[in-house]
Image (tube, rainbow, N blue to C red; front, side, top):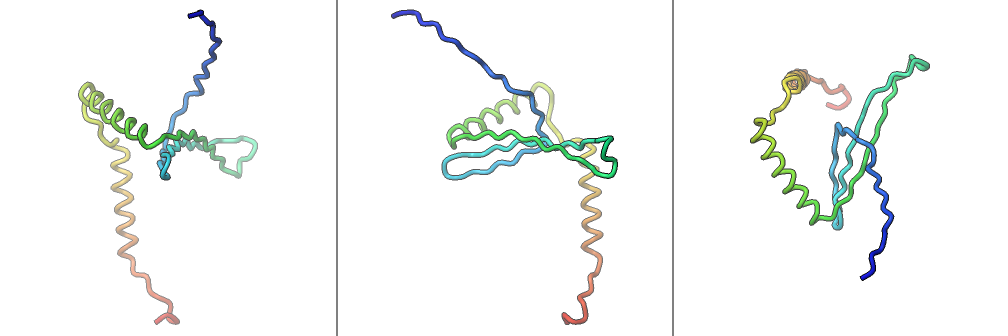
Length: 118
């Protein structure tokens, strides 16, 4: 066998912090859409808010999706064994409690139907 030299180039890609994830599927693949939504401040346009949305999409076949699911479960177990149980951040708990109170208040408000409906 003759030793052949191969030129290889690796593109590591850019680091990406995802704030959101949506997962969809069709019969042949799962679509993982990792999103990062960040507000931007532009001194030139003081009257307009600006939002930057970036996303990276990963497509996997069902078999590999199941393997990712198993791997993530194992890694989470190891993480919690080493660092303790992962819990919802306090700030998020406070926000959820506040949102529930506001929703309950809106539900309790009586909304009268217009006279032409009754």
